[in-house]
Length: 303
Image (cartoon, rainbow, N blue to C red; front, side, top):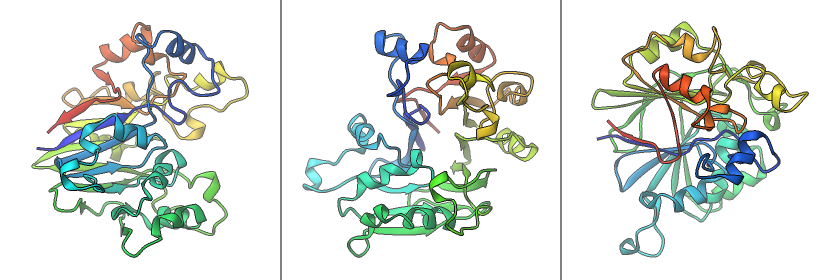
């Protein structure tokens, strides 16, 4: 049986965001029983609890491990051990990779990444801390549309190429940004299919068809509306201009995927300004009425 768990569901900065006093962040600080705090986006998959794989590595990873006993070392296995066998990276964004630096305690791990993501990380001397001893990291190169297996778990992943550039810090390195800078993942086990796409710059016909063939899809829910950031903080960009299709509107995610009535649809990667984070809001109710779920820290599915 495939287990998939969300260890965090917030966009970069988490909830509440450290420098934000918007309505949602204020409510989270003042009434966390209504709007609970959220860690930054992180997911884990496994079929065997002794072999767990992470989807990316968030800056909150240490706290997420301590909040989920399945990811913690077991005393009966000695003083140094972990059930975490590897990490699949879908981009080189700091929000998805900084957690790797927290795993630098000489622990053998496998990292699955495209060539351009690996090159982006290793161009920064910080990440050389992950290769201080032989076999500390085993890099496995992945490519769009080429399935690969996660160890002996029986889980098969197929990377899906998405439109996206390398993060700001990695630009100017002379890397081919068109090849593997941003991926989604199709995760399969025993005929069950789950799509993990927390960053969606465009709902293409191909992506729509991919979703149609899934049992569950986890989809970019960063912003409710295109002008959400501008309405909260003057001078900030539109959602689409920074690579996120908003939830609402005639050309928003809910409308574009309304025909997928038989697919379990879950929003993840929720920005701290998104009004759906308040479960009492009209926006949250609209999401639920449209047949979607709003992912939360600890959300899990077994397929």
